[in-house]
Image (cartoon, rainbow, N blue to C red; front, side, top):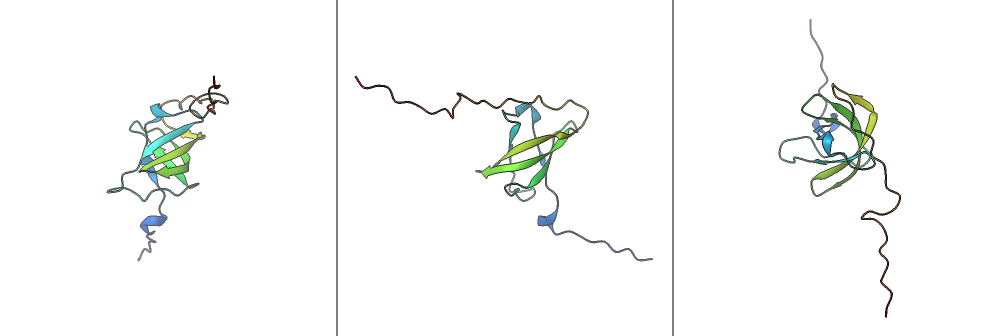
Length: 108
């Protein structure tokens, strides 16, 4: 009896990244460092990735941005699995914060 197996090229395999879910930011975004020397190829913008922590918790995330070896991942918390509760949903600020427009001081 012979068995046929299809081996997927490395760049077509699903990407699983280690994550620290305690560091989720507003808007359910998580920064995940990429390890170029060992791991999978970096995700492309918009690509789905599975994030996994050391406790067996995980979820799907979409790559929003990749810069300087850090992937900004948008969590899909509806896909959460694992023994712990998912991180609390973070509100998105509509005013203030570092992205608020800075107004010039009036001249005297």
